[in-house]
Length: 158
Image 1 (cartoon, helix red, strand yellow):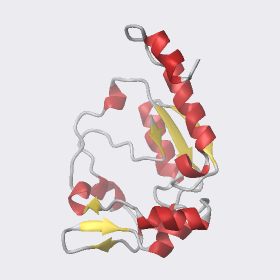
Image 2 (cartoon, rainbow, N blue to C red):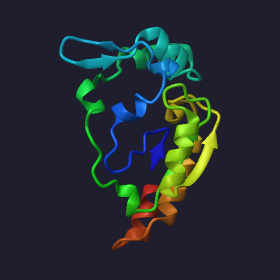
Image 3 (tube, one colour):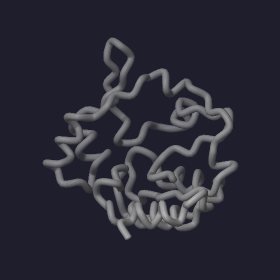
Image 4 (cartoon, rainbow, N blue to C red):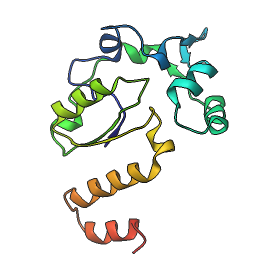
């Protein structure tokens, strides 16, 4: 399950993918602290990363954001799970962190069941129902393990 996410293939890195063009509006002004962790500035977080989230909620999310280690951009992907498992992908068509065309490319090469919604990068916050529906459709379609049907019914409170 990918929600407005990078879908790296074996041998790829975030740094190489992001280095292929100018930074997106949400990532254009990363602040890197002395320990090598990157943070989004408040304006970029609220106006671009969480563009369709209520501004008051977006400021709270900004305040509690988790930093990303800059070393993450150098990490090279091993064998991705999407090559051996069914995959679902939600494209956020108004994403200003990962370009929607890149999200579409990730989903296509995965062979993912894909849904597009008019959302910023934080689709799970601004469009929770659509995200839940995609997760439920993935759960319904996933191979059932031992007592899997009972587990699915239990997850849904039935």
